[in-house]
Image (cartoon, rainbow, N blue to C red; front, side, top):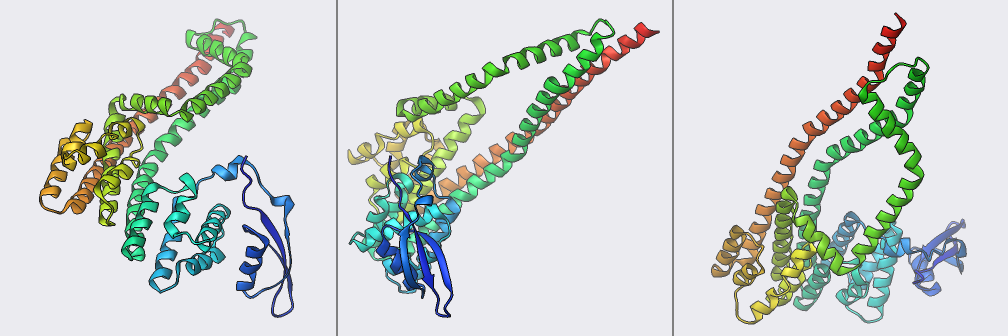
Length: 406
C-alpha cells in the first residue's frame, strides 16, 4: 500500500500577534514551513498531524475532477503569459488550491520541477492521473517555446470534451430518474402495501383474483429470498469489477457493447469524434503524426475499437496515408475517411479533423436526444401499467368481498 503525502499541523503567528493552527499537505516539514512563510506568517511549530494521515486506497485512486483540472490550467496559462516561471506559477496556484486531492498532486509536481524536471516530465511522473494527450501537449509546448499557447489549445479541447459529456449526462438524467422511481414504487407496493391487504382479504376467506395471487406469491418469494439475493448481487458486482480489471475481459465487454443495436452507433461515433479531436490537437501542437496517432487512439473509450487501431501507426510507418491506415482499421465511417483524405490533400489536416469531431459530436447528441425522446413516453406508460396492475390487485378482491357479504 502506498502511503500518501502527509499532513502537517502548523502553529502560526500573524503580524498583528494572533496565533493560528493550520494543516497542510506537504512533502516535508521544510516545504510546509516555506508555504506559510510565503504567505506572511511566522511559523512557530510544524509537526505531523497523525490523526489525519490517510493511507487508504480511496484517496490514492480518487480522480481529479475535470472542472478543477481545467481551472488549474487556466490559472497556469495566465501566469505563464504574465511572465512568471513555471515553479513560481505552481506555487501561486498551490496557495489558492482547496481541493485536497489536486493539492497533493500539485505539491508533488512542484517538488519534481524544483528537482530539475520539466513540467511535462513532472506530470508524466504522476502516472495515469493525467491523460497522455495532456503530457504530450506540454512536451510539445516546452520544445516549441510556446507553452501558454499549447495549454490554451488543450483547454479548448478539454472544454469541448467536457461539454459533450455534460450534454449527454443531462439528457439521460430524466429517464434514469424515471427508472429508479418505477423500481422503488414497485418494491414499496410489493413488499409493504400488498402483504397488508393480503392479510385483510384472508380473513374473509374470499377467492383472490389471479393477478392478486400472482403478485402476492411474488411478494412472498421476494421477501423470503431477500437475505439470499443481497449477497448474490454483491458477489455479481464484485465479479464484474474483477473481470474489468483484466484487459482481455474489458475488450470482450466493450465488444459486447458494440453488439447492442442502438448503442453501437453511439459508441462508434463517439470514439471517432474523440480520436479526431485528440489527433487534431496533437498535430496542431507540433507532435509527429505517428506519435500523435498512437496517443490519440488511447482517447477512444471503447477498448475493442482501441485494439483495432493498434496497427495504424505501423501502417503509416510503412508508407500508407493516414486515411488509408484508418480505413484498414475497419470501423471508421466513409464520411470521416473522405474528410480526412481531403485534409491531407489540402494541407489542412488539423482543421479537417476538428470538422470531423464536430460532425460526429452533433450526430451522437442527436442520437442521444432521439433515444431520450423515445424512452420517456415508454417509461411513463410502463409506470402507468405497473400502477394499474397494483391497483387492480388491491381493489378487485374488494368487489369479491362485497359480493360475499351481500
